[in-house]
Length: 227
Image (cartoon, rainbow, N blue to C red; front, top):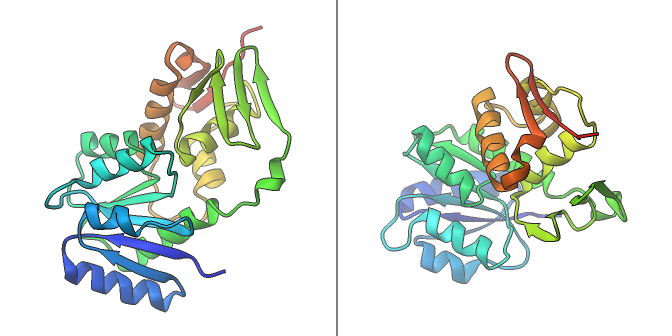
């Protein structure tokens, strides 16, 4: 299956370089030079969006937020010169699956793009009919949804995968290295700080249930179930 990638950047030179390299890797590539143009080019078979943050008109952050609010969960990797921790947090909060700072290595971008696409290609039938239920905290593995007290909690793909990893083995402590090996096994350049940022965003979305994900300082993270 040929995966379709949409590259969104107002720098036409960057778009051209990425387009050539991804086409050489077997991707079907489309380019857009603004967020407004990109929103018109996204199709049901778009496998991944490479999205610049700072563009004239609508920003990449706003575009991602718009997509997520409309129910579109196409994986997004931000490509940006903004690499401060707060910028990274903003990227993940609006639904990014990954965040790569400019200037970047083409090999790094391709490797991380392939990893995100592969994670999104797991057959849905593999988890058919399964749920993880902890009182009013219900994780549906078939629909990829979390409901707390009947309310649907919108999670990114990565946040959902993190939650499932921890919740499937309550009280087991997963080190950051364990988490990287389980979720980002084929993605180079992932740091332990990336894990902390994703966990922080996930815990914030859990609201009053945030303490179900506990950090054991020096060891890692675990999912707590009260007896």
